[in-house]
Amino acid sequence: MLQVLKEGIMVSRPVEGGEPSCDLWTFNDRVMTEEMKKILSEEWTEDQGRLCLWLAPAFGRIAYEVENGGYPDDLEGLDLDRLEEHLDFEVEADIVMLREIERAYQIAFRFVRWLLDETPEG
Image (cartoon, rainbow, N blue to C red; front, top):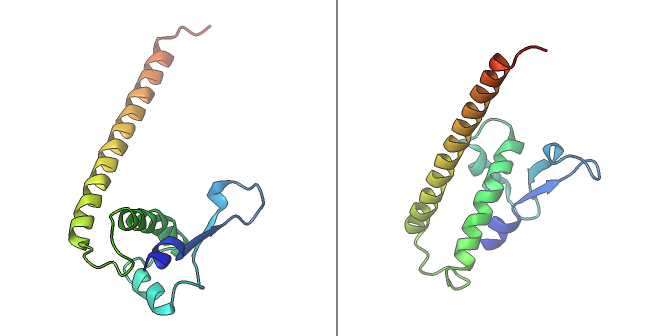
């Protein structure tokens, strides 16, 4: 299970030294079965690259929590509901942070508009 979470999604940069926005996020066929890919893609019918882009950090975080939670290799005792609740709180905190960033941008643009309006043309 950990191998799927840690290696199931891979990223490649089509051009050496290219921009991260050009990265290709894909399922790793060496690790992911067709059935796994189908299950993951059933609810996300849009671009598979974007699905992989957002699954990668989610998979990585779950793997981190499992590895550092003291679970044995067979993951006996893993409480998925508790782990999901814990990570839901972190996602909520990220959402609040993004709303604050959005608000800060709105304030900054409003300020720049004010500066442009108040600055005498010269």
